[in-house]
Image 1 (cartoon, protein in one colour):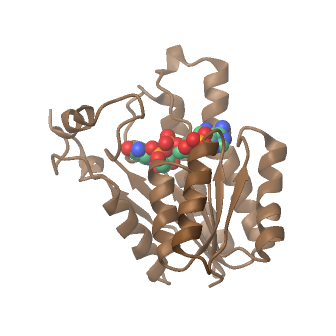
Image 2 (spheres, protein in one colour):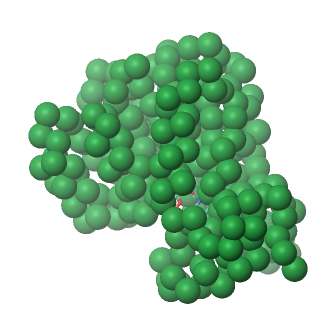
Amino acid sequence: MEKTALITGSAKRIGRAIAEHLASEGWNLALHYHSSEKAAKNLQDELQEQYPEQVFVLFQSNLQNPFAVECLVSEVIEEFGSLGMLINNASAFEQAPITETAFDLLDRQMMVNYRAPFLLMRDFARHSGSGLIINMVDTRITSNKSDFAAYSLSKKALWELTKMAAIEFAPSIRVNAIAPGITLPPEDKPEHYLWKLAEKIPMKKPGGLEPIIKSLDYILNNEHLTGQLLFCDGGENLGTNP
Ligand SMILES: NC(=O)c1ccc[n+]([C@@H]2O[C@H](COP(=O)([O-])OP(=O)(O)OC[C@H]3O[C@@H](n4cnc5c(N)ncnc54)[C@H](OP(=O)(O)O)[C@@H]3O)[C@@H](O)[C@H]2O)c1
């Protein structure tokens, strides 16, 4: 497989961990970010220093902007010559039950978490022709809890799209998803917030980044795997303790 990957929302947190891992495995990276310019630049510099033979290029865009989304894959291919993997990691995460969901919030969640991945997958299939797509969903897709209604529904739609695309794009492109559970706290919340939440899940602790990286490797190394979802959620999808 061509070892160039596009990771959306790669400047921080899970996206950054994925970028660091793939770089250590010899991948050239198209590092997409939106507002975290400084963090993205730091990541690019850090990776370039550690892996001088590889190529790391930043791509800034707002995934709510349809024009920017429709240009991204072709811009990456123009820069690198080819693209072997797309990781749809960028995400908007806003809390509101259905009755409190404003038009703009619904729009943002669907544009960033569903429409952009849809169009990027379409363009990857059109222009790359072979390779691997990984969509970051969420263990919340197994529940009908409505505290993050628009977010959860956008991720449910992304998982359905994963399966549909796995059939349409096979056998040249594999399409899989990873569903993290309690992994990292939101940027405005402390670590102990996560440990409190984790008391209710079967494994009773937050997962952190390692299970996600291991799942990424499992998908990468299993060439017969397509249309599958790997839960990295400490069993949360099975149900929580009262
Ligand atoms: N963290 C968890 O515990 C957890 C749990 C379940 C599922 N997940 C899923 O795992 C993935 C990574 O999680 P995370 O917590 O690391 O994500 P995150 O920090 O919430 O978001 C990742 C990146 O998405 C980008 N983004 C947001 N709005 C955007 C927009 N309009 N246009 C372009 N980019 C935009 C941001 O880029 P900039 O910073 O550059 O603006 C942000 O850094 C997400 O898909 C998330 O849904 C995470």
